[in-house]
Image 1 (cartoon, rainbow, N blue to C red):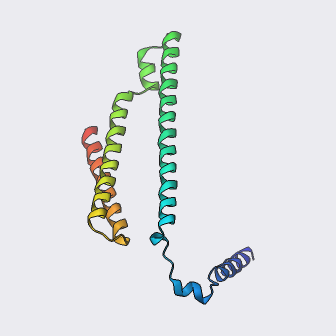
Image 2: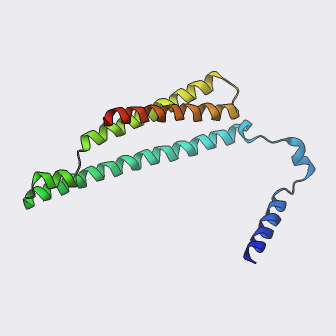
Image 3: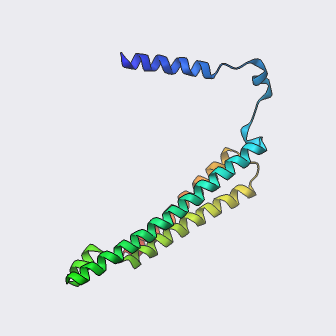
Length: 150
């Protein structure tokens, strides 16, 4: 019975969303041709990206600091090097792989944006080029990590 009410509510809500007058249908509004909308979208995306990068940086610094504290406290307690090595695996190798992963991802994004700027106008093919370039960059990282693991 709940499903029937949910389905009926969804149908009624979708009909109210499509209720438009004839003037709106004639104007054929395209949001991405509206300069103010595009500028607001760019600002929002920029703020979200900068905040996420800043928070990732802060979390990485905190993790490194806490790992160092744990290592020093284990050394002060007299734990052997094997136990410390098992609890805290080598961060240098992991950091190199993280750096290479970000290199491949950012190179793929750069390649995709370059292709999008070359093949104008913007459309669905732009998304396809970005997706393909990111897929190629992830494939490159996969082969790198497989080769580095050997």
